[in-house]
Image (cartoon, rainbow, N blue to C red; front, side, top):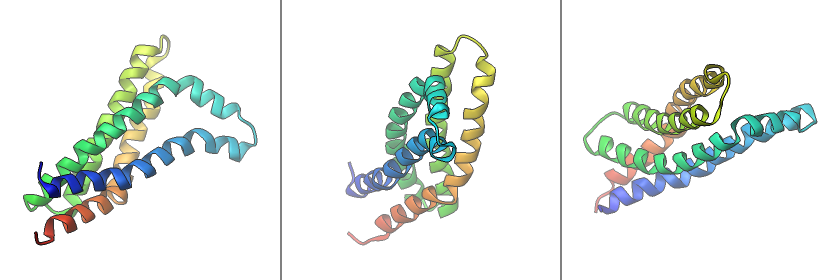
Length: 149
């Protein structure tokens, strides 16, 4: 494997993993801080607990794929914003598809209603990460690729 590809994937992990895992835990536990009770956290974990575990595992895999995709896009001369959009779309598509598949397999009633929040989250996360974390990761991968050997 090319050294620059390895550095690109490592960059994806070093920036994406801590931020993404922090957001997952914040989504679960912040409501209890705002409302002063753990009922909302219990509801979130009870409803989406198994799916969230699948999301985190898929997230770690998708960071590798996203880093590889960003490396190839930057290497082929694609723009930074397009690279960021592709990176964010791939990462979010993998994690939210995994989340929805697990919901579909584990929920017995009201599957459609249970799919609405993750679909909304996919769109929102893709847009937000395209202009923030994805852009930062793409920028750093471009810097890695522009350095002379």
